Amino acid sequence: MIHRDAGTPFPLRVCIGPRTIRAVSRFKRVGAERIFSPKESPRVCIGPRTIRAVSRFKRVGAERIFSPKESPRSVLFIGFAMAGIMEMMQWGDWRVTVALVVVALVTLYFYLTSNMNYWSKRGFPQIPASPIPIFGNTFKILTGQANFTEMFDQLYKKAGDQPFVGFFQGSQPVLLVKDPELIKRILIKDFHAFMDRGFKIEEDVDPFNAKGLSNLNGQRWKNMRARLSPTFTSGRMKAMFPLMYSCSDVLLNCIENEVKKNSGEVVMEMKDCLSCFSTDVIATCAFGIQYVSWANVDLDDLAAQAMLFFAAGLETTSSLSSFVLFELSKSEEGKEIQRNLQEEVDSVMQEDGGKITYAGLKRMQLLERVVNETLRIHPPAGVLSRIAVENYKIPETDLTLEKNTMVFIPTQAMQNDEKFFPEPKKFNPDRFLNKENYNHFAYLPFGDGPRLCIGKGKIRFDAGPTGSGCTSLQV
Ligand code: HEM
Image (cartoon, rainbow, N blue to C red):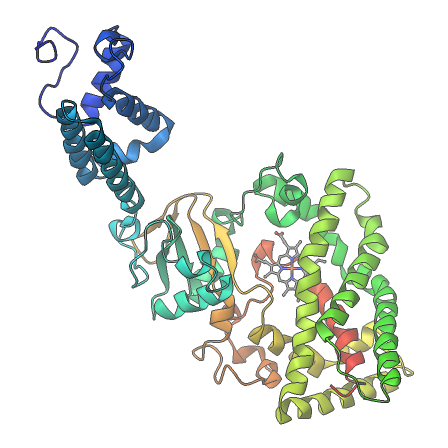
């Protein structure tokens, strides 16, 4: 009766929904503690605790679940559930427990699925596969059945001819972009709206990685990028070249010794060898010449950038060199390319007095095409990411991408799509003979725009000595 008395602070007496929950909290605050006080009886109803939990849940930002605007189903459900629980107060304890478990499970289900119409509600095309609660469209990657790039290959194929599609990474709505024109806008023309990569690393948890250039955001990224950019200017590359060349001497001596020990023929794991070579090159450059250009960077930042250069440079360059050797030895066509490459290297070396020089390397055109084609088929980073740092109206549509939405560009999938590269499985360096032959924004092994790979200019010189050196071996 007290509850139904208009004199008590309950403004609503029939429907139990968010407003009632709010009213209950208010009621408690104004001093009606008595009704729900656990002191009253040890077998007191556990409903108030649920209500307290619900209001705490709301306070920490789960407003969406209970908001009629977002999900009327959830409100109805909570209303009925709460009414049911109140009713069951008279029943045995086990029923209440079972009911609460069911309520919790169904609430969880509604919570997990409440956002799954995010893209359709905003009019965006969506991957034609229903997202699974918790896992979204990324079940395979979250359960270890596919790696990141494989998963993006699959999503890319599922997306069909759409220029962009929404999907769910776990429960987070993210956008996959596959149209070269829109990619160009995101990476270059409208870079101001997509300046960050979208990785958030807490500085107090992992200070080194958080401070690394590739994880920095906004103005901090701009400042650091401006400081580090001169690291790979052509003048510095020229200065670094003899150091790199000496690293390739070590690599070749090591391989030749192994060959001699095994009377002319040896099976070696080239990826391991080339990882040692890449480590050598990066360490030599990072702690040799580059140190001079980093003189104004503070010590913590210096350590973070050095670590990042190792992380970003080691696996990428060693996997590139390994795949060059793999492609040159895989088939008869590959071996033919290998022979042509060897002729090119020999002839350029002859012109330069028997040595590989910085200028000579630039004249090795076939070598460059071989590197480009290897990066097309086996890009070490198969996906680019950006995050919208402001609301972004997608050109020539009425659609607006909301701030803080992640955008993915599936470079590996595009570079191996016959729409952009005919006979994509064929290793054919000559497709890079003419820049007009392919769409530049469908070929992005180093990314593009102000945030493209800072080491791009250096790769030719990493892969160069390896590629040219290794052509003197029969792979
Ligand atoms: C084959 C070799 C390499 C490949 C394929 C590669 C690829 C990439 C790609 C795709 C990105 C992202 C670009 C974007 O988001 O638009 C990137 C960023 C980056 N790479 Fe590389 N990379 C290679 C070698 C290196 C090397 C040798 C270094 C350093 C010595 C390096 C340092 C970096 C850094 C610092 C970034 C972040 C740039 C920024 O956020 O401003 N990379 N790389």
